[in-house]
Amino acid sequence: MPPVNTPTANISDKHKLLGLDHLRAFAICYVVLFHYRQFGHPDWVNKVGDFGWTGVDLFFVLSGFLIAGQLFATIAKGGAISMKEFFTKRFFRIIPPYLVMICLYVSFPFLREREHMAALWRYLTFTTNFGLDVSQTGTFTHSWSLCVEEQFYLILPLCVLLFSYLKIGKKSAYLILTLFLAGFAIRYLNWQIWMQPNLNSDNFGALFNEFIYYPTYNRLDALLAGVSVAGIYTFYPEIKDRISKRSNLIMQAGVVLLIPTYFICTPQPTFSTTVWGYPLIAISYGLIVASVVCPGNILYSVKSWLTSQIATLSYGIYLTHKLVIHLTQNLLEKAGADRNSNLVMLCCILSCITGALLLRYLVEKPSLRLRNKILSR
Picture 1 (cartoon, rainbow, N blue to C red):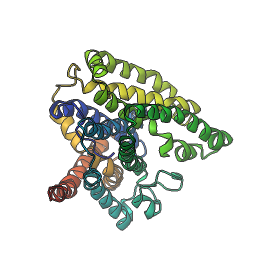
Picture 2 (picture 1 turned 180 degrees about the vertical axis):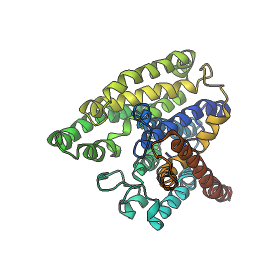
Picture 3 (picture 1 turned 90 degrees about the vertical axis):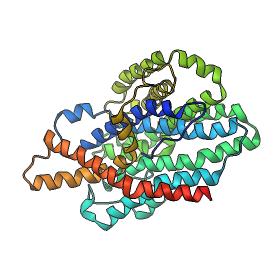
């Protein structure tokens, strides 16, 4: 997932990162564990990583909260949103590492985790998440979530500018609620149109991903949950104060809610996941995110070098992990190692961290330096 470290309104960056970095680290580890099941893996990974796909939803909540928080903070202070600054920051933080990965996949086919890629123009236009048939396209498919993020980054600031111009203000909360409720109807219709007639299809899982799991219009719940938290914390400080006093209890409620949600969403390609699962996941992670940024929360001041480093590398890990796992397992298998062993898994994890470090210091940091020069002019 794209990095989500933009400061939000009325929250100390120092402490904000302490809480949210734990969530970022958890999210990327959970996602990698889920994807690791696609490769050789120990048996225990199937059970532990089965719900790991929700780590992407946690990233969506974080993105919605932080990006919207940045925009709302500017409006709350009476300032004007600079579209040039906003898109410049997003471009140089996200696009260069992403383009490097595409170049690697295109130039060196042996790095591909599966046989086929989608059309190049889909990766370049961030539209891979529409019409993505994983039974035919298996390489760099996790870029679907980056497409959702980029579409969100494009639409949200334009909406905020429009609402600010029309002086809609706090009434925009009704739009968020409308979109959230519309998600139920849209996913229900998609299920009836695309999934119900194919319940006995051998390709049912791929169809579910293509028509339910990947499209942006089906996955707005988590982003809207993050935007909602940012809006409440920026424009309704009295509600934020009440939440802050009960932040540990609210965080526990979010964790507890994930338990029934797990059973509702397992197995994943079902009607219950389609209609109820995604909003429940969004609400659960939304409660957790809303809690950890409060001073009274137990995670607010917990310092961890490990989670901080993993959070910093999360974007690089997300971009590279499938390629790195595929390459590492192939090399170790040629050396006589069992790709299903715990030892090979440990080597793959270390390789993922190494790959992310290379991407960070060879691509991300130079890009950020260039970005800072452009913005300082």
